[in-house]
Length: 389
Ligand code: APR
Ligand code: PHB
Image (cartoon, rainbow, N blue to C red; front, side):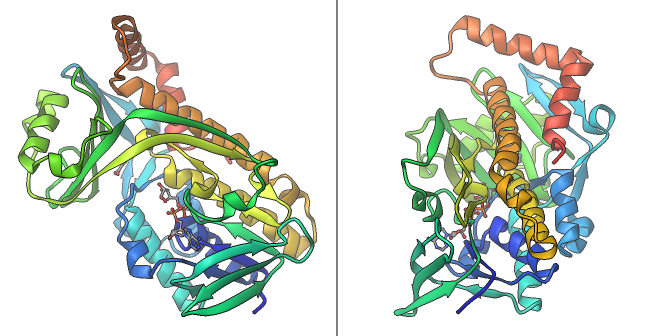
């Protein structure tokens, strides 16, 4: 088989790139190691920067997102039974769109299928060959049969545990990593959200986050030790702890219910450089990971796709390679700013085991400064809604 762009991974990155390229007449094949149902079964955040929402509209998959998504003009920050709002509209003249990643991925699958997009599921043993040469190809097995795709370019959208990043020689790759000394225990409950916007809470007992998927599907998180397991937490224990960590005015309104999903995720900051090696490009979690505190996971994936999509259009339509040559530099410049913001939000809101009293005082001063200073709120708002591409 031959195609122009071979994309590895049918998560949000791979699907969005495939759909955008298709609308410009650029052909791609997507290789996915799981089934579509498995991919859609992942529970992931969906706070979309305004630039990401625009990209979805440009891809022709923004209709349900605009109809069912929730526009948020701000967020609540809480500490010590006190809360304040950061107004994105007033401070950054923008908002974010809350629309679950599962629904966004579903919309992308539907669009690819409607366009007869080629997605090969249940692939195994994917191997990227000759990426640093002139004629790259990808070998893989499906249904016990060895297959090969010859292409112009390979794009690794295969997430943190994928094969693409590891295809770049260790002598070429430079990796940066920070592991956080806690995890996030998350639950999904078919209950109305406690507030119409998100509540990020710093408390003496640890971080908490109140989020949502729709008017009757809420998502809550508690910072927890890394050695905890979801089964260590009964629903009642979760709700009682959440009420202790958010302001009373919110706790009083909290509607609890049985969890329909409960999981613990570790927190990590990670970046690999460069994001290009010859004819191989990395996008999304294949190249970088952020702690979820700044809601940047999906948005950093979209950031890469924005740059690579425009670079590929420039190449295939205008015959120019400047965008491709500068992809890694431009993508990383924005990724590192998202890494900084996610690291800053994580430091602002969590209880660190090694923290001393002075550190807690610094955290409190930072929260009070954010509450009282318009410029501080503008900086936070501009980063949260998404810096310019
Ligand atoms: N071959 C084929 N497919 C693979 C391989 C492989 N060797 N390894 C991984 N995959 C697939 C996974 O099954 C998954 O469907 O690649 C896809 C990667 O998707 P994501 O991990 O969702 O990564 P990405 O598309 O970059 O989206 C990033 O998703 O994980 C969240 O928090 C993350 O919100 C962020 C967004
Ligand atoms: C979520 O809704 O899952 C969510 C929202 C905002 C975050 C992280 C997760 O910062």
